[in-house]
Image (cartoon, rainbow, N blue to C red):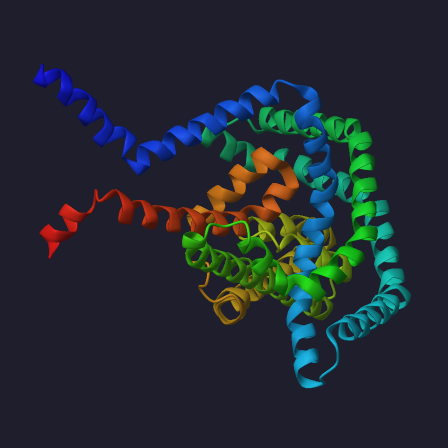
Length: 384
């Protein structure tokens, strides 16, 4: 009889009174509820359409907010101008800069870009002819015999892969046009969203705190502050580093006399937003242009690229980015590859800040679990 009464007490002690087990049960119930409702199309489809429509404008507005908010704060603090008026002044200044760029830089970019597109088939044929001449030489045949590798077969496989890649790209033109339309709509709506973010962004944490239980508000505010700091430092630092890389490469390309220097530098600056993998992608068009120009130009281009990467790695990134993210380079590479497989181009761009935010949340959840569960007290007492 006593044994029968002990089991309900043990069950109540180890399960019903255990906050960790109760949290798991609540999470399981929430997951089952979401799974059931996801089978009903008219419930989640409007939510998915809304998120798909709002995601791009919010993303662009968030990036612009982290870039422009320090300027608005400084303008409001030093000149004592009302925040709304300061935002309007900043908008007018940005509009003037964009107009100047459209009138001066865009025609040069257009000319170089059209020239590069027109000459690209000729460049590919020239590289192919050089490769054929190389494979037909006696020295190459001797090396091929010693290695035991059939380069003709490798060439055919690469050609097949390139053909299939181009076919897939052509087939994806329709989806690209649709994505371009969404981007245009996002760019049009972004200034309006950004205006209210810059004006009322500081009130957002206090507004969100209304929905958080009183006991969790201090820790939640700390988590939000760390997340904001991580994302802000990454976005500002990465864009500044990318602009510096583009400017240095443009100067270097001008010095060595490389064709299409402005377009190649802009491509490098845009791809440098992606850490580690971006520079490897950006060097490809520059290598092709330098290779078809002359072997000496290829050597000069490699020298310029190496010098810029050394300057960026040793001086620019440590000063601007610092080590605020505290993420290992190998982890960053794996995160970028995984995000690219899962979410495409946007996943590659948002991989590192998303991982930084997730790391902050997981770290605080683990600290909360360690404090609440009591599973780590014995180990800590033994160490003391």
